[in-house]
Image (cartoon, rainbow, N blue to C red):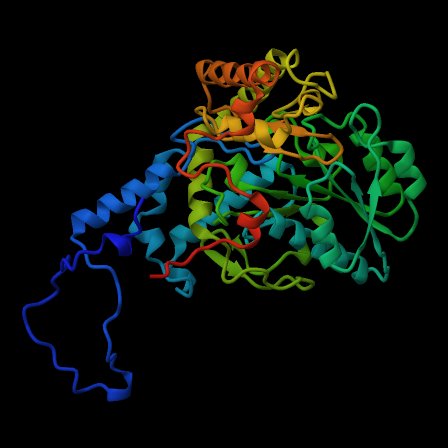
Length: 473
């Protein structure tokens, strides 16, 4: 495919005025002397070019997107319509409260429903994404201990945790202590007990964890941590597995971030935008970033009066357009939010049972919204998990997450979400079985994949570290 510069044909695609505009009012040093160097095409040619580019991208509207731990569910287009309403998208963030009551009311209502869904007492909508929420939560935890005169230096993190967990805690100055998993793929409580001392500020957990397994001993862990004076942080990346059935408060957590761009169906990927609100229990509410949106019975307003606030973590009030989309999704789903969880869990278990004959299944138990296979069997025959992922690109599916979590060798992490039909699940299952058979009968077909993509086999390391994003004539 040619670049838009290569397609340039000196066509003037736009005409702003028939009048010659005098530039005498400008200082001559600010007037461009040379041509801009932009491509010259008609409007139709430009539209065709970008349509052609978009066709080369893979997206949820194009096929199955089982990216484990990412909850790539369908984003309803009505959410986009509502977020584009003039009163929302054209409202300046410095508009006085009395002129922005509608937007403030939306944020306040979203705060209230998220508090109800998580079971928490207070919340901030500021954080821009999940990892940003983690950082915010750990800042709150650190300042809490400072306020009570304790200098706790350690944070416990299970060995199956998301990679951003240790990074977020370390950025707040904590030492990271890894907690081992037991033979069931869950937190080893005996190892946890051995690590507990008065220097431990918190534990960061995901439940269900990154293996898609519910932590059966979460209440015992909560009790152990609280008896030690420590706090519990809940990574909400896998919230789609529990929504409507339980919540972090019932499990004993003190802080939780929620990925609105996962569980509540707003766009994400490619760097954002996302949103990662952080909710806390009563004793931590004064440490949240400011402003939070409040209501005095008559009007909605931005409250900057939290006496122990960690300060702002994002300009203004967060990614407002994402908040609008998430609130629209929650209102549209209503009590059916629980059904989203039901279907996500059902879909994951269905695929798992169909594929465990063809791939290794390290933990052969009922999973939650996702599960992890292993390609060890295929690796022994010369076909790695990465090769399997590349072969999947020839089908109507995006590859799942691979090589994560690290505690499973040749990991293949699959999360179907609730969006997909049984027909789509069966199509994916059929492709995975076909690949397993090709390992035995035609491995070269896999090792040379992908065959049908716009860009064929690439060097992932080189592509990630040295992307070529410029056009040079």
